[in-house]
Length: 424
Image (cartoon, rainbow, N blue to C red; front, side, top):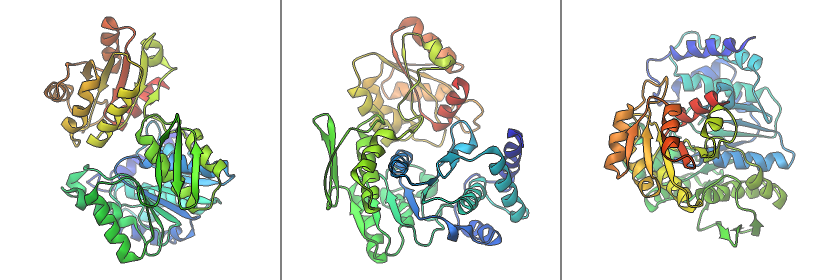
């Protein structure tokens, strides 16, 4: 089959529901049942929810497991450049033929019934996982947790809740407690749950759900601790102390993400070598990724070119900390965002660490904020801001005045995906 095979099927799947997001599990259960309930045949599942850090945490867990010789399925969303990135079978991205076949099978089994794109493609991933031998399955929640299409595993090996913050209020609730309640929906009776750093309101909800279900919690600051220590990193839990390198993923927030990953690995009985590999081998694109090759990097010349897909206020705070700790150099942002995001909350922490912002619209995205709107929000946040037709034009304008600049393309995973495709 050609790459048009899966693309064509995915396009048909987009038309099966009038909404992109419609949170319920009824349609997922119906389709899984039609396919023989493959969710019951998965290798042991590690289920990961949270607002920020899900993907990085999953990448570190996978790196640790694979270093220990384990075969690992992994499911993540959204993809950046190609849909195939969402489904990793026993360590390898799903092939075009395998993807087209499993999508076709799910489309036929659905029999024209209403179902969202995310729901039917999640079922396709589960079907592929069930048919491929592996030791573990890593499932990353798409949105929320309680009604997310991934929340169909009766008894995972471990659940994980990374930091919860305000995002997707139109689907998950207006308060931190409400959002935490949705994330805590992945907690299962008697199944251990690793909990990353949380604000008090979120933690109280998570603890309440776990208590009702008799789920043992392993909470940051109570049952495990992590922090930088003389250029390295110290992790401690009930099993003792680990002295480890700092994560190869950049940013202070990655230390806390590493802690959750390490706690999962320790819960599964893995050794120090696996824990070291988790923090040194993990790869996760568009999380403060340095672009060193490709047409856009060549265009940048002597300038540093970086890419980050964070898009909510907590991500803005984390990114500001990263910029504050980088070597002193003028930092110029090229920013595009979706109209569903809190743009002011994202930009305000960054204002003190940037020389300018050039706003762009995200190519091909109906929900993009117009560049002019992003620029106005940046000015309101205290930045010097302008607009450009596209990223290449924005980069050229920045380099005209500051050829040795640090340039960070940011604001959306959809913009990041566009850059990775264009610069590939």
